[in-house]
Image (tube, rainbow, N blue to C red):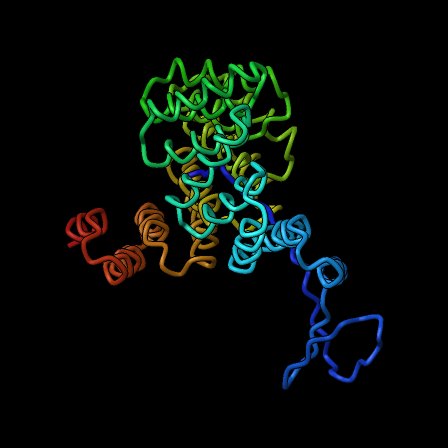
Length: 337
């Protein structure tokens, strides 16, 4: 399954091999084996806090640094300090809600977002985050309600239309899902996730426009493995072997993707009847994942077509050693007897 939602964070901790650095310009935390230099950005914030220990903005600044660097517990500790000093700013509740969300405290995230909106009813970011929370628990009516509130404030908000599309997709209302996603890309022509969803929705209906949507996603992220895989799979589903092979091959230049190897094996086995080439691709998949049951089964079918029954049986036996209830291998062995 292709996932369209992604979160990027920046790593900022430098590890030193020596613990003898006493340069006064760098604050160093020493352990028994290494000396860890405090990142300059964090060091600067800490120095500011020392001079103004009751300034909530500085703790908020450090909490956002921790958020970006995946130090969620430290970020939450700072945000609790912030709110103990000043609980009147909507942005503070928005930040702590993000932290709660990332440590799976969805109830606390919801409460923080509601406090944010109570202070700032026109905060579209908070409204859409609440909509996202309700989407995750499949309370679609409530999610759409918050989305519509956001759109009353900003009728051109691309994320709001995207979120509405995700709700309609969840509700199996494909027509409205497509319409909402199309509106999202009209508002933001660089909306990668919306193009991916449009591609997936169109591919499910076997509509060739899926190709255009995936290519738009690749225009924005040329090395996206999920977009290349989805495009290759669509070509494969449409039995456009040449385009499928070309797309999967491009993907394999970016990463060793076991499913791309496997699908190339399927294409050469079933589509092109090139059994030796199919064997190579199935083996490529197994080299990445030695427990890839379907790839062993594919190799077994190739050996059957090449009249190498002993090798075929060995592959089917491997399937069953990995997955004793794998029916296709059971059937194949039964026929071989």
